[in-house]
Length: 390
Image (cartoon, rainbow, N blue to C red; front, side, top):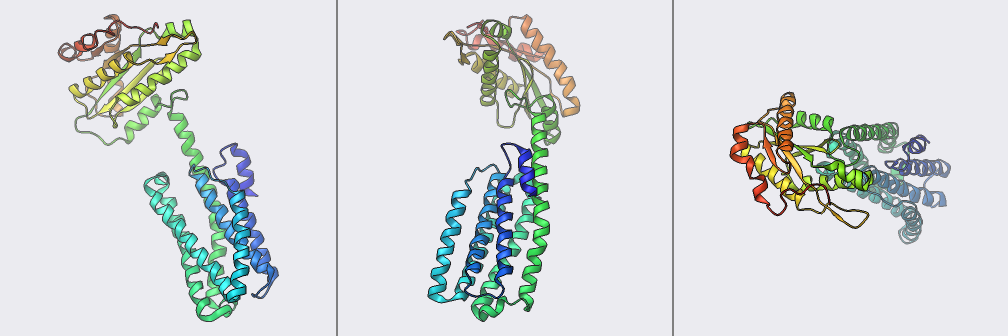
């Protein structure tokens, strides 16, 4: 019931809580049947109980996949597994007796839990890398169930159904562990859901909703997490030339599409370690860690040329929209604390470039600007002077 209530509040992305709710419901039904069955043997309740137990494992596994953004169907595989395993149990019991049926469940559970542990451990570098501690704890808890089921299998094969009597030490330890997990796992999953929600809210707060680039706050946070580079970093401020004309002539919807296209161009033009940010409106920023003047100038010029040579959008009237950008490059800065000074320097360089004719790269250091930045218009003469007018 708890997972159903949480899932209703989450909207479309339920993070697997709907599958976890189904797993809890099925497992609860299995335990009720086990209590009603009484002594172990050939009862139909035992067959249904075992089938539901395996079905609960499937539901929990699907919930885990959905939690980690792997959409997975549940109802049809669940019905197939429960009905198929019930049929297999009947055949196994008919051929080898009830001990084989119980041993089959222990073996299946041991393998299933072992597989879940392997998936979690291998996922520490991929889908679970942001939840390493939680994934390791869950793997340890699940691994304990797998080990107990493996031990139960060996005892069943050696001692038969007598192993399952509740007056035995192993069976008591088995159910104490299971009951302990029943009190630990549900709140643990709720904690994971809350953790994921918090992370997503933080990600939303750090991203521009239109382009999904970092926003100003996200850039500052990313710089705090970056290892300090001995060569510092350079900041590139990028402004679209005459962007207002696109909005005025073709509407804001087309203008938004152009901004998204520019974002894609920036992602492809920078280095893998560079941070791309939308500052607001038609202004973007790129932080180049460890970049000297030559590297920063190369990135800026590549951005300028790529934007100028790219068809960003087909206008509603069929015209191909091109755009140019002016880039201002700051001097070296070391961390987030010195970012503001770098921002002022790059901003001043950007506006010098605007007044000098646009579609160019300008430096906050005028000496560097004279030596390296004046190549902007000569490198692509065919496109020189192109503005946002189609």
